[in-house]
Length: 395
Image (cartoon, rainbow, N blue to C red; front, side, top):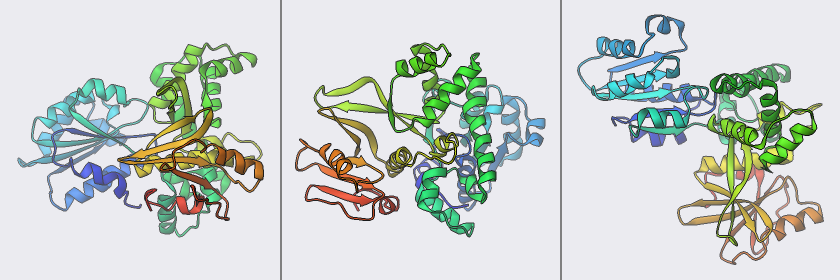
């Protein structure tokens, strides 16, 4: 498995901190692998390491209470500073008590947990400021290519736009096997985790709403419009219920809700967000007859890459013309339009006109899958295949 230095580097600064290190993210994005890589790195300097995986039945057969964790660590450590790794910690009731106790006993504690039971609002409440959290995401294209090389495979750009970057999916060569894996993963992270976690009684309605949201990625949403759509199909859900369910999807790292900013109103537009999937595969597995939504998946892919690069991303309302992304980092600010192709004159005009009225000093970028360079004196065109290999937009 590839080393994900992009994620490990910021965690490294906290290796010896008494703050609890929480590694979180959507299921099967690689949290446990990050934990393993950190453990191996620390092992080069210390032998005083305790690792427990609570998905291992042998472990849970011996350790069933939070006190058992503390006792096991104390029995198996040496007196020196100790590193404790607890994988899938949510399987233990009152796990937070074990974490808080260990950090007071000269231990550096690292934990991972499933999105079904270890959500951001929960560890914020349970650990009350005694933690730092790090969100892990599925592979971006650079990581896909690196892991594919390890597997002696070639992954095309189109393949990535359809099937995304859940790491294990790269191990399946046939589409049938790939779909079985992704559908099973989808059922677990979207249906079982959230339905069980929040004790949702309207199972069928929730599944329909979540499917509608995930196949509508890279679009502005309205809870009311989704509720109206459900009602027209014989499913009665209120706007408040739909909004609550979208919040659950966001809280479990399955989607991101991106705010829309209006310079005219000088504020974020309330109740107006664009939704992006954590991975485009969650859209593609819902498409029939291979009619994949490459246009919206491409925009979703650009969003995920910008976040990976470390940009703060919002949608920008330029006097009624929507600009797909305003990406900001430090003193750098970029206005970005995304399209599958601008070879058609009308599409070219629509995408370029969105930049009208912006300052001449503003950086303007157009990202498309075209091979022709459409750069102008004011707008830099970046081909998608080049953008996906960039480390940042300053290149």
